[in-house]
Image (cartoon, rainbow, N blue to C red; front, side, top):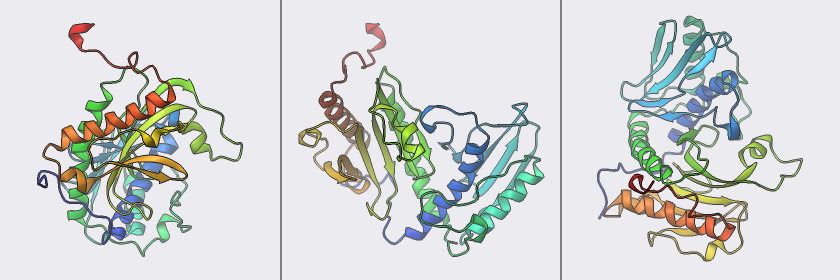
Length: 308
């Protein structure tokens, strides 16, 4: 029985709508990347899911004496910039808004807000070499698609935070990485991971400096052509793919030569209790990786408050 509280999401047939939104989020994210102080594992560049849409959170400028935020307000279909000086500027999002127009509007909006900032104005890791200001072929902003995706992310974000609270070790926030457009939360064992090759990308070197088990959701891409939840352990421990996953519809799939736990969004909607099923998926994937990798599972489990 499908859970009608969760909107139906598809990737096939909505590839251009997804990529248009992805490019919008990359543009917004690059301002946070440019101005925010560094934090481990790229945690300082991400977006957050809010009750109204997607937000950068607070971004400092003017040597930290001022700050601003950029919000993609899904409920009001507009982009908003708010500064600590009291400025508020916005422009309306509309169906078929192009990437070039979005970029131009946002740059003008920041100028009016007196936020001086320049970014590397090219997409990251999407195979597009044009500047944002030149991307007119992706003009597929679609309000109903964005609203359904956001409604799902609001719920997923809450479940991720609930799962995160069960762990006593170092844990990332639940946040959205705009380079790959996945909502993720990551647990760390506390041990360093083997050093990556010198030729590895800087983004990977910082992201995977320590042993971790990551969990996430993304709305689909060319490789996995449907919205899905995932989990992977780094470094990948031998035999992880032989461990049981829950619910029964979850499976191990190969990704870049390593096993990744996958639960499709469509299968989750079939569950009588999606929250329980998603928590079971994350817990079973965590235990599969943690036990095979020799993590001190009991020490890293948050006890009930009445047992402290």
